[in-house]
Amino acid sequence: MTTRRRTSGFLLAGLLVALVVAGIGSYYASSSPDGLEWSAEKEGFAHTAEDSSTAGSPLADYAVSGVEDGRLSGGLAGVIGVAVTLALAGGITLLVRRRSGTDDVPADDDSRTDVDAGSAPKA
Amino acid sequence: MCNKVEGVHVPDGFLDAPTSVATGVLAAGTVALALRKAREELDERTAPLAGLTAAFVFAVQMMNFPVGAGTSGHLIGGALTAVLVGPWTAVLCMTVVLLVQAVLFADGGLTALGTNVTLMALVAVGVGYGLFRLVVAVLPRTRTGVLVGAGVGAFASVPLSALAFVALFAAGGVADISLGAVAATMGGIHVLIGLGEAAITVAVLGAVLAARPDLVHGAAHLRDAGTLLRRPEVVASR
Image (cartoon, rainbow over all chains, first blue to last red; front, top):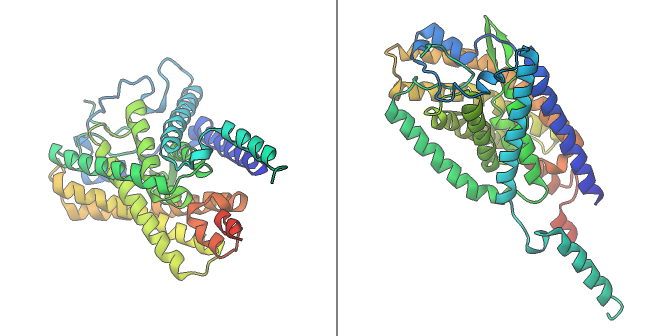
């Protein structure tokens, strides 16, 4: 129980860091071309890049279309990205994870405890 | 059509269709295998950490850091994720990050998704975790050993992923240019970015090891040795 609460606190702290980095910190990220872009420019294959077919997405290039303020637009995009990634990755890992039969439903723990408690005096 | 590189991953157009299809098949096969193998790494306690790690990697990938010469780099996070939650789970986490970036944020092309998954979920995770295991095997069983292993794996994973891109470019690059020059430029700049990758990986892993060493996949051997805490099955057998 205590471990579970401590784990929740730890996970929430981690999520908070991720939200702050994506929502606020990203505004201060370097806007220089990254290693691949820079290499592509230098070696002369940057022109072969094509716009992504999702370039029209309302979140394209980490900005929310319609939000004028750059800081708010980028921050909002970051927060949405963190939320979607958490939901998708968290959902997949929860589906894939190992489950020991009794751990599936939390209610089982309670009922098992009741049975144990009830059978204890007989033993 | 505005011939401009947007975002931070491999865009559409750099590689020809056969190469993109090949990396797509490779990526899909790896993810399918990872969906089965990750089961052994994930239990009730570690599954939520895996979701959080993916969200964290997404966030930190937005933080491009300057590496000089008007260039920037960002964390890949393959080595960090593999050490935190296990290599097969890391394949899934990195793939989700790349999928969200490509579909929602137009970062990395859709036809290049297989290429980006191959480079960052397969090569970066494989190299990062493989080197981590090698280093940890020869170092003393301490937290410092785990951090050094993760740092070495993280560092090497970046230039090696860059060289893997060059190999794909050799097979199916659309532009007709000198491969040696591309390899030197890509490898050189990504050695610098790799130093940033190692610094972020060691800092984040150090913080998690200080707070919850019991959740870290790559620190399980410390638990075996009784350095951190006893494993549940050891307790149960007594």
